[in-house]
Image 1 (cartoon, helix red, strand yellow):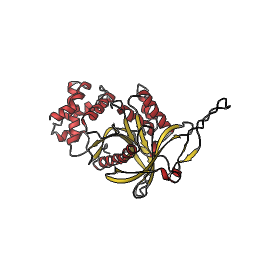
Image 2 (image 1 turned 30 degrees about the horizontal axis):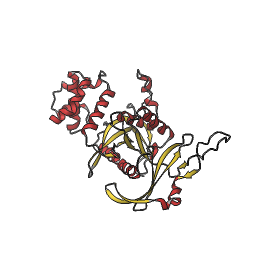
Image 3 (image 1 turned 180 degrees about the vertical axis):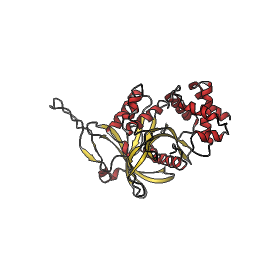
Image 4 (image 1 turned 45 degrees about the vertical axis):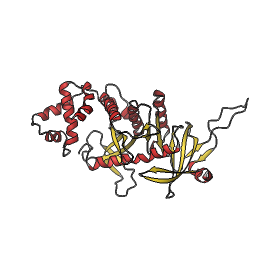
Length: 354
């Protein structure tokens, strides 16, 4: 009970005394319920009288508390109390999207989504919610978990931007930009920044610009993303030096390089080291190089070329030019933990029921 008090007490400042009572009941009900029937499950879990259902319903309908302030307290408490795993001295905030089918097609936020999965058993289209999840990696050297810090619907809520009094345009942004903004909110509660392993869909110019915007706002706590380029991706060398008095505008980029061609042209520059990734120690060959990326953006990024024991080739990229190869490889290897988190939530029906 002392530990539960320690977790819940920081939230008292956001509620009145009666409202905090319902907040505590809701949190404990979600943790102890035996089914997923909404508020009824909480009432049943604590054997509350039927009349208390109305009080619980009234608490959820009220808007006197600020959800953003409550979320900020949750981030601060989670980062302080959870056994956070760090790489290069920085916590790992993993971000990704998942879709949850819904039977009710007219439920807010439900729309027709295209399924990007390569699994032939998955339908090409589905009706449901598109969720964006930002999770912190916790655990120890033997077992790791992605603990969700923020879970929001990222598609289908465009109309809310016109309804909300503050004119919030977040709902009109792309899913990728919303995810980076979501991670940026958590970043403010970290001590020295964070590393964010993301899948290849996040390597775009708008997302890099958003990351740069966040880092300019918080230069002491930078966000370092680790992701993958396309298999046919290209990058550029530094532009050649200009001679004194040379005419014309300065060049922004140098030679064009096909990234995957470097596995052949730079084969003699690869190093070998045993690294613990995906739960086992593997002999990994790797090579790093800093190149310009993004047409019209030409931002310098660090690329790490990897060859695993089974011959699998992969390229990782980060905006943090101070990260070493081993940290980049380890960070991205932890990314799949959020997929385990999604699987667990869907199997346990943690997402809102139909």
